[in-house]
Length: 405
Image (cartoon, rainbow, N blue to C red; front, side, top):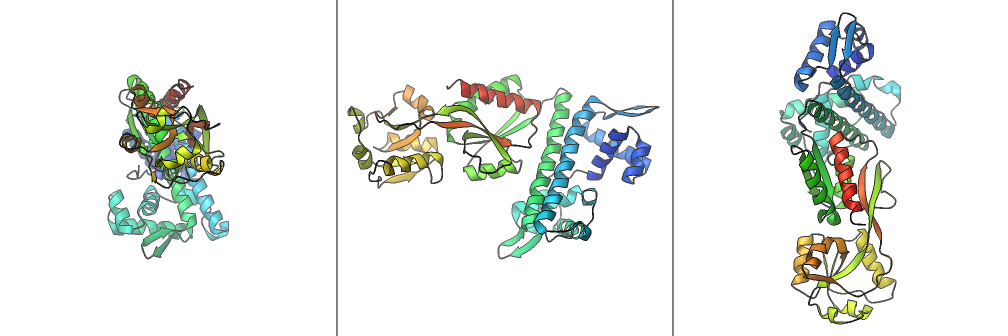
C-alpha cells in the first residue's frame, strides 16, 4: 500500500464526471481542460483494465464496474477530508489561515510521504520505503506542510517525529489508500479474477481451530485469495487495525472496546482451565487446593491480558500466596513444551489445548475456577467496508466460532 501514489486529481475528475455525466461540465468544476479529463479517465481505465464509462452522444454514463470503483474513491476522498479536518482541529487552526479546498490541492505523493515518515521517523528511510529519492520525498513533505500551514514534523534525537495533527492526518491518508486498494480488488473480482487479500491479526485462542477452519473454507471457495496472518501483542495488532494494515482481529474481546473507532462482535464464549501434563503429580489428587497451586511453577500470559487478570484474581480473591516461579509466554508451542518438560501449570483456554488433550498429552486439573467465561470474537474498524470475499471470510469465522459452542 505504501508504494501506491494515486493521482488524486484524476480521481476527483472521475467523481465529477460520474456526478454530471458530462466531461464538459466536469471540466468547469475541476478546472481541467476536456482533453485532460478525457486523458485522466483513460489512464484510470487503463490501470484498472476496465471500462468505467459508456460514451454516448448524450453523455457519459458510469458502468457497473465504474460504480464499484466510484464508491471506493468517494470513501477515500472522505477519509482525506476528514484527516485534514482532524489535523486542523488538533492544531487549532482557523479556516482563514490555510486553503479551504486543501483536499483538492494535496497530491498522492505528498500523502505517501507523510505516511512513510510516520512509519520510519526518518526522511532517508521513508524515501527508501516508497522508492523515491530523499530530496524528492523531503520536498513533497515540506510542500504538504506549506500548503496546510501546519507544523507536521519535529526533529528529535532519534530522527523525525510527526506532530499529533500530522499523526492523525497520516492515519486517515492510509485509510484512504487502503480504500483505493479495496476498490482495485473489487474490480479484479468483477472481472472474474478474485485476487483479494485478507490480513488477520490473531491472538492465541483463534490460532488453534477458528482461524484454520475459516482459512480452509475460504481458500476452498476462492483459491486465489491471499491470506496474511499476523501474531503479536494486542496493542500492536489494534494499531495495525486502526491504520488499515490489518482487516480483522480475532481473539479475546475487550469490554468495553479500548477505543471508539473499532467495534467488537462476540462469536462464542470461552472458559479457562488449569492445564498440566498428563502425568503431573496433581493429576493423582481427587481435589486440588490453593496450597497445591501455590507450590508449583506456572506459565502465565503477559501482564495486561484478560487471562493474566484472571490469574492474579485467582490468588488475591482467595487470599492465597502467589506462585514464586512464573514464566510469561503467549506462544502455544512454547507453552506446550514447557508443560511437557516440567511440573508447571498454566491457565489457558481448554480449546487451545484440545488436540493435546485428545492425544492424552495434556489434561485439565480438577479445580473449580468459578465463572471464567469470556467473549471471543472479531474486532474491526467501524468505518471498514469489506469486500464480498472479506464478508465471506467473516461468516466463515462466525461459523467456526458457533461450532465450538
